[in-house]
Length: 510
Ligand code: MCA
Ligand code: AMP
Image 1: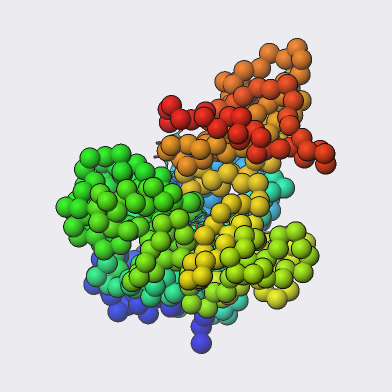
Image 2 (image 1 turned 90 degrees about the horizontal axis):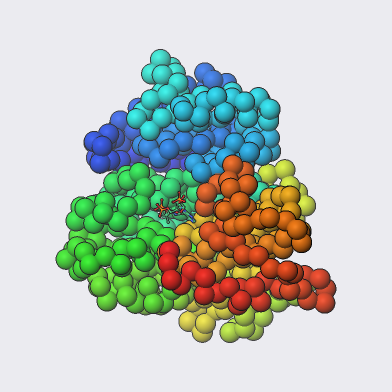
């Protein structure tokens, strides 16, 4: 049997051939039949462009239905899909191309010159383009290509995708996800969240991360539902779309923004049956306010790039604010002593390191065997880096992070990477990057900088100096200066003290 995830999707897509798969506000819609046809043409194009099974296909394109069909085509031809945040700068892209050595790099038409330069200097990928109006050289190649009829044979453990996740050391790591990792998790979620062909998902997430790509699209494909595909989150558009939807998946910022609007009422959500949240902590306050305004208890779930989704609040039963629910079927969780070496489970009710095991857990980090061994244990448990507690009903509560990580509007920012760029600037002795409570993004990236005595640095000059190196969402929203950073006796910067010192920073404004 072919374990290619595309083959699984295709069975359902054929059954739903006449039904809508993707609809857009611009009217560029695809039925499942049209999606199958276009994915076959794109798979034919990938083959003609030299992609063979196991080849990475790196993709940095704007959100469009064709980008989803490219993902499907890549699976079909046996390639390894490697989506990249549209905000990444050429500097950042150079690292990913150099590390992953993709056969092909698909970029936006306007970015072709920079992309060709970067690709030539890092790994030598062939560059083609895909625009948000179904334009670009890849679409032209697909139009002339012989469609690929059958999905290439893949086994369950073969790679389907690599998603980069930044590391605490500052170097991004490519999480290798197999066909079975993705397929088994999507099947669990369809069941857990009762997805069916009657669903219409309001899709406003970006499609280069686990949430918008796998959680949202794979669940729709497996259930034969349809999605209203929005280019980005915009509250006005969401209010316009809600009456046609049945479900929406979001990061907490979606919900805090909707809550600020008087249009958020029970009537506005009359056709909706489910709102889910993840990627960052949803506060109990947001959960309760949303329920008061709409009658819907947001279903919060918890996942990671390396593991897909691990736990979920129940569809039926109590969705407890401030918790991420219980493990999905087949997923095991344990809380261990984070200081201990032997990963002994702690007594129920203790706070400790959350570790997870199951068919959802990835195959390791691309070309980083040591990192993989550090985080993926011999017994199959993966160390999440999240600190958690499990209550007597088995609900998991994430209470903090052992890893130095900021989550801003659902995007992860690793301080080490930002600090590295700031520390390189003239006049900077050292820096510490922290996350502070932010009313819109949950946490705001903040830099605390120690300048050299005679340096003439200010907030704007620091941000300007790193702006072409780092994606916008990673850039500090505020920069503060101090004479020295607080350290403990081991010399480690006491970020808790800095968070305390600057915690009021974002209270007044966004
Ligand atoms: C945009 N900006 C941001 C962010 N997004 N800054 C910090 N953090 C962000 N998340 C910048 C913009 O460039 C802009 O800069 C300014 O902030 C305000 O932009 P605005 O128009 O308000 O932002 P937006 O375009 O509306 O975007 C906010 C957003 C978006 C809708 C929250 O960031 C988003 O869609 N986030 C979802 C992320 C996501 O899908 N994460 C899933 C990861 P300026 O004005 O100066 O130009 S997968 C995952 O985490 C795991 C596996 C899981 O469990 O799901
Ligand atoms: P990523 O590296 O983008 O996959 O982000 C994964 C991290 O996001 C997790 O390790 C958690 O720290 C965080 N996360 C995801 N979902 C939740 C949630 N529902 N509550 C709290 N943190 C979350």
